[in-house]
Image (tube, rainbow, N blue to C red; front, side, top):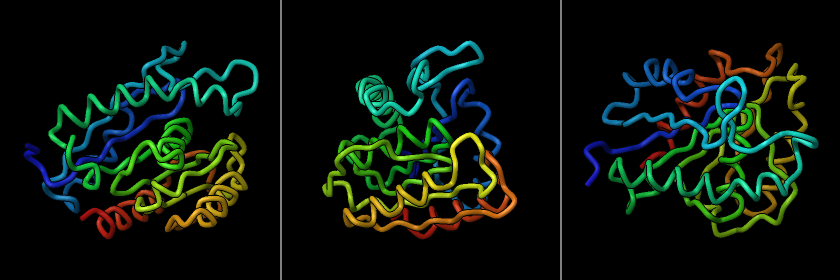
Length: 198
């Protein structure tokens, strides 16, 4: 049985580590009491850290993301079970940035994970059929207008695709922001999680 009411799983970007997202947990903790924050390392090694899928060749090849699904599901299932939320996915939130946002969006859009909420910073949704079975998960997409790594059109397209499939989606494209989590974006995400986690 979970000793906390909610579980927030941070999913880091390519070549990064989970620890790099934990300062966000520190800033959110006072506003999300009785919430457990975890930031697992992606299962694949990268020369600068870890990655969720290989980006050699075409980094946005949907097949690469599909091949990463099994390792993602095993890792996240282990985390959810260890934290006591195996029977309470509706009280689990994914918060992903860049590559972490891509695998989180894929997990929910494919219908494999019915999370309580999903926040995707600077992400994209790979071309794929979207399963309406996951549409109970509310989604917030936050993207910098000046992002040159993954252009903001990616989140605009994802919002349109998910909305068409019946998902409840909020989109926030931030002026003057690049490929990062801004303080305003972090605040928006915090408000979204407070509103949507049961």
